[in-house]
Amino acid sequence: MAAFAFTACGKKESGDVVVLTGASTIAPIIVDVAKRYEEAHPGVRIEVQTGGTSRGIADTLSGVADLGMASRVLTDEEAEKLTAYRIAADGVCVVLHKDNPINDLSKQQLIDIYTKKETNWSAFGGPDATIVVANKADGRSTLEVFLGFVGLDKADVKADVVVGENLHVINSVVSNPNTIGYVSIGTAATEAQGGTPIKLIATDGIAATTENVASGTFPITRPLTIIEDAETSPAAKAFLDHLKSAEINDIIEKHFFVPVN
Amino acid sequence: MTSSRNTSLSRSIDRLTQGVLGLLALVAGGMVLLIVWYLFSNALPVIEAGRLAAFFTDSLWQPRSQRDPQFGVVSMLVASFLVTLLAVALALPVGLAGAVFHRFYAPPVLERWNRRMLELLIGVPSVVFGFWGLMVIVPLIVRLAPHTSGQSLLAASIVLGLMILPIIALTSQAALQAVPPAQLQAAAGLGMGRARTIWSVALPAAKGGIGAGVLLALARAIGETMAVVLVCGNIPQIPKSLFDGIRPVTSTIALEMGYATASHKALLFCAALILVLFTALLVGWLSFRKVESDPGTGGA
Image (cartoon, rainbow over all chains, first blue to last red; front, side, top):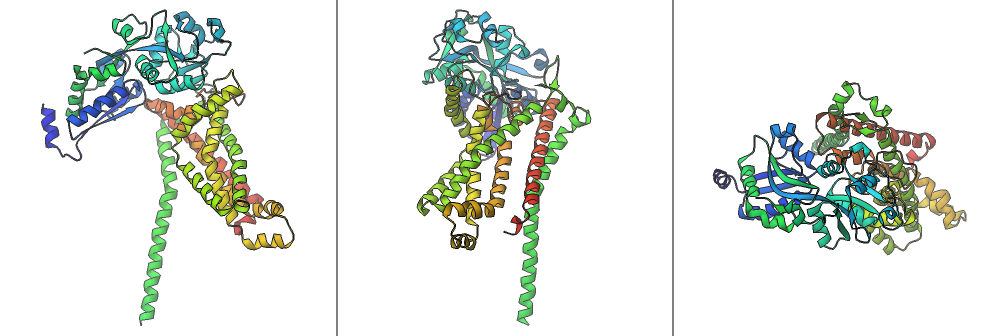
């Protein structure tokens, strides 16, 4: 409430700016929430930039961002200086082109593909075509979550393409149908529903759906969190409270993530 | 006397103009020094720690690895220069041929429209070029080489080549336009055909301007980031074929600068500094060679 009073008293034109940076998985939710929030709170401006969880953590610590977006659990070291608030749950799933006949890959098969032990789709009942392995760049939590699941070290992965953003993975699969990649289930489902020719692949026989993430049966899940350090501005605090509330659950569901509050 | 006062007034206006122009010119040139200084001061921790040599002796780039940190930048420099040279090699013949056609063969209407299109091409945001490359060029390359990812040296060269094409075409056109008509008329008077005139008179006379355009395009290409990161594959390796993925210095910076903390950031600044210095060397060497081999163009 104090924050609102402060906002109302402040100059209307300049207003309060809340900057969030970090995971490209979370950014679309925040952009939608921000649109509604800015309408309800004239004078407040929310700026959202992507760059990966590591950037969100670095920017929040350095003060470049008021709040960070992190799509994985913080390490003990990070948790000493930062507090994370869960706003949603997400899974990481494998994506293939719609024309690829394969619908399910086990953990062992994923290991074989990402270490180049198997290099042809025919080994898994697919067409006679070389597998193109797309991996995420360093600093992306999707990479860490996926590698944690398959139990591989970064150095073990032999990639043909290294990409940053979730959408770059999806576009790589679209532009070359022999590509395998992994992205956030929410992002993949949104794109697939929008007509992008990709499909979400089951892992160890469990379908990559929001329901399976919600029930906890999908094997690769992660929290989507907003992080803050000890020096959060009143305007950022107010926006954080809004993000922690159930009021944004409709937007979270619209993006195919699982609300937790 | 009024006339003497006028002279002294116009002289002081002259002096003022000269001063303002000089200052603005210095700002433009000094900017480069400021940027290089900024890069240098941010890269200083790496240089002070004596790790500069590792940039050229390490074979891999894995600055954040706990087990075995390595800072090899050679493959990235090679990638940056290869992709730039290939882009120029693709854009130069097309741009130059277009310029010659428009100067000597095309009707003025066509020439005007084509120039407008080229100017529009310069204004297309690089991320749009990158996205178009990923969605159109990459699938074509996959059809050509079905066992590759398509995101490759070739894809990046084509996209970059298209981006610098208008620079080369427009500067070449201007250079050809500036060839004195008297020279062309003299050639015609000697009974030379149009093709012969272009080849033996117009192109040699416009060489300096065309070369300057190529240098501009070269510098533009080597620094391009957004378009390249989307189509080059980002694999830090020295490519063995056109279809291999590459990772230019700029891509590495784009992918890593966002989240880099202290020492990692200094390493990235250092890589950027090395790229800038190598580019300066290349551009300097090329323009020096141009002057050396062709002392006559200066006056033309």
